[in-house]
Image (cartoon, rainbow, N blue to C red):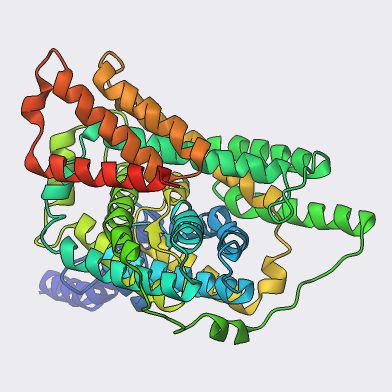
Length: 496
């Protein structure tokens, strides 16, 4: 009897303690999961490493955990992408000023278009990709459309507006497979290599010359830029990704202290009223030659965008050591609306909007690979970059204190990262190597991405036609269409 009572009491005590034990076990398991970086959301069993419901929702939307990234990597990647591309706010107004476009309006519209365009790119594509007014496209806007075509900058804006709409229309079906198949994979990699060298060349040039006056500045600025580059490279190799935030800021502070000691310290004035100088000033008074520009601008933007997109995607999602073209094509066309289509549609939409502000075309930036290097793998980093550009509109006097010697090293670092893709090219195939060399040399030499890509592509097709391996059998009708458009681009670019 006593034994029964003891057993009953013991069982009752066990029953009373069980909920507490279960609760403690759950808490310990929760803490252990948190330490291990794993946390399960109640919504569809999605695995996240965060506790906050808000963070879990953002994590789920951008698939941050699923893509083996973290908020820290995404935020720092976005900031690094911002610093690397910050030069566009000073370079774009200087280039468009050649065509008479108001400087203040250009600078503010560039910041606005870059900010909103990059945010929409991150939200809609999920790719760590920044978009802005492209180098090469801005030269074409000023030198070819305005000066050579004898058009006003208002007319040039209307041409960009219409051309952006055309990009959107053809991207729905044409870019699904057709245009992609017209670019041989090895040549595509070579183009990314050439564009990256162009970016590095601009970075080195901005270290040596003042970007506004073009006067040589071979003194403390160049030394600071080299030290910043060494600082970034050294700490990046140690996986200290905070260096992409600290290096530009430290360099900027040191540079401004030196400048204050040498010359009078000035902070530029700033205001948002300048947007009205260029916004909605379109003039559709086209001449006949203006129609000729549309296909040339289209092929330029498509080549530039597609090659940049595929380079960033390869860096972010695929094995960078062993390149598998079939796996690559399967990845970018795996959905009804492929990633490449969504990116081109977004660039087309924002190019058209850029035309409304009488600004040049919007294209993806190869500098986006810096975010991937930091560890960013999702569109959340693009959102961070876009927000930084929008903030720059409000605090530009502070942003302007970040000199070229603080940002140019990141451009050079980007080049160093991207040129590694050239290892995927078969160097024994001269029919591929020669066109890549032609493009790589032409792009920085003529400051024209269009000329470099078009000349390299024409060289490629001609070599395939006469190759002893009978490569002409691999030429499809889409490649012939692009070939003709490339020739038109070259003829127009060289026509005086």
